[in-house]
Image 1 (cartoon, rainbow, N blue to C red):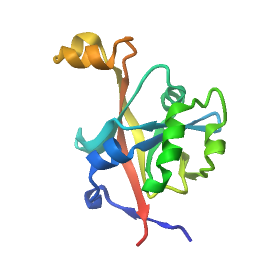
Image 2: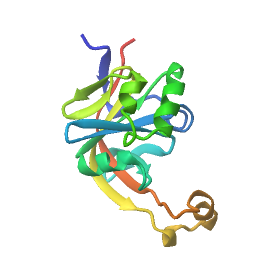
Image 3: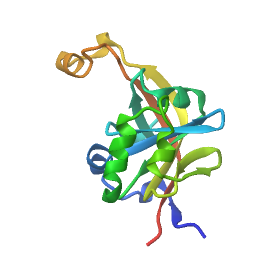
Image 4: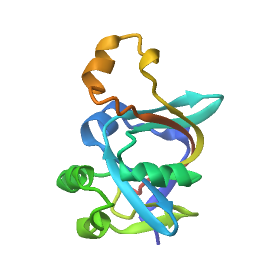
Length: 170
């Protein structure tokens, strides 16, 4: 018996500013039968093209970008505060250099073909709809470009349709 229940996006009553910006999330995808994940504190949830969506951004040097680029879907997972140290570790180590998921002791499970973590308290599954690299000429507030991209390592923006949300049962 699963510890999760599925909810509709309209029933999602969690503060995305706190979830993403303060608590952080793991962005996870699979390539060639191997999952990789990264911690993120930038992104959002909303409505685009009459669809419930999540948007994430990934820098070109991040190993997880290869997984997101090759996959049709990805997951966003959120954890309770006791996992903050693990999320910090997963955000500072690269899956290129070590099996960081194994070292984190998190358990990869799948919803259809999309990997996520059994220990999560919330899992949002997304089907990729859109990807576009940020460009320096697109910034209206030039301070953001100067402050966030001194090395010109511009994020790629991904928008995914939310296909399923799982939350812990009460």
